[in-house]
Image (cartoon, rainbow, N blue to C red; front, side, top):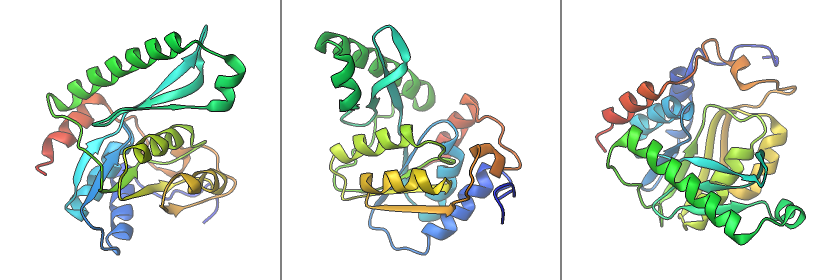
Length: 218
């Protein structure tokens, strides 16, 4: 299969294929964490196949003062939300502690708003001591996933596994030190865009996420 070939029909197909791969393993009390929105349909198929609990994992960037698109870190959702700062950039820019705290609180409010929109009053599931499988629909650069893994590990899961349908080898290599294991079905090189490996890569809507999460009864 070359780098231009279609690997998956859609996110559901990718999720089922990823689920088959993960079903070869015997996980102890797994918890599936989906990166919204695109990771949700993939993770839903995995959670169904494994009979596992599933939750959403929001990651919101903390931008530099006066330059919000330039990330200096991120806030990672959870029962105990975590701040993950890129120390090298923080040393260079030297944002004040007050600025970081204000941005953290702002992003936490946005996470709470989105969680409420998707899940109502359902609270984040505690991951301490759990085998956590973080799922997305693919990885391009890996920045968001890296922050997610760092934040999750701060909450002391038993084991952290990254599971994605497709990613470039270079990104996976950078992420190996951030988790216990990586499961990836397809690692083309050269890579391009995640969507190029899906026949249907239409945007996952808010209503799609709400519908899928409402179907979960575990």
